Length: 337
Image (cartoon, rainbow, N blue to C red; front, side, top):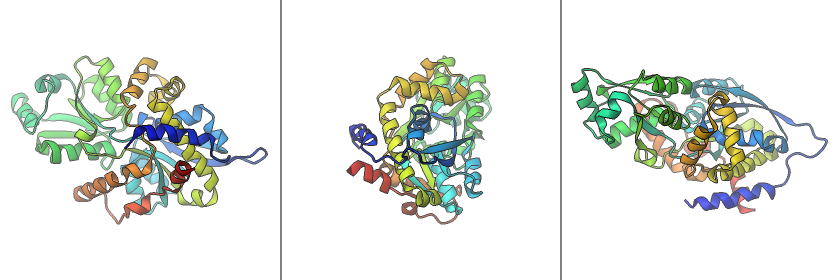
């Protein structure tokens, strides 16, 4: 994947036909999101006016975990969802009529160790690390991550079983929401976490003993991450609005990848309840600069691999045709223009 291609595609936002003409009423949409950096494009378009230019009047609904967003989609509550590909697959397999129209990030998960575990590993980890930690301390390592079926939890389990080839019985896994994962790390209630930004940067900034032991494709090759999904009904009724939303996603992706100051300030306003220092948010965005990807084609094969693993784990049930989950037509029309 040539990431420079994304930056070129960002310019297409200004070449795209306007979805909202003067005098028209804005389209009211319920937009679900989690206050995490992997969906940073949403925060950028909210603050730079792209949402209004697309003719959208958003009703923002914040969630702490993907399963709650899945339930909202199944209940017909959301028109647009910025969340992980894992919950998106679950929602689609259970009957939610949604389409992934753009990617947000790839390779977003890191494994962070703190305290005794960080000291014990010495900065490296292998198949025997958790077993030896248990034998030395007399207890299992406590590792927190997001809900079962989420991207962080899936990537962590894949890493344990297929990459490290460690014994899961040597670990106590605690599933929590994003705010709780961060709090657990900062207070030392756990020994580590499989998590994402800005939690990684916050932990590194506030805990001198924290260390990143693995990240990105080292944990799950070509892992898909956060995505932009839209209800099929919304696509059918407002295709021009959806196209403008995808164009805005492309433009915001370019700004984030370039470390644009306005984009970073937009992320600071929404992530972590707006309480994180700008310096920490800037570090998180810069650490993630290479993973912001809006092209939905880039994550299709990774989604197939994740689906296969989740089916084996039992965290994804029901039938799911991965191809039917994606609608790349909006992105394609913008890139070919």
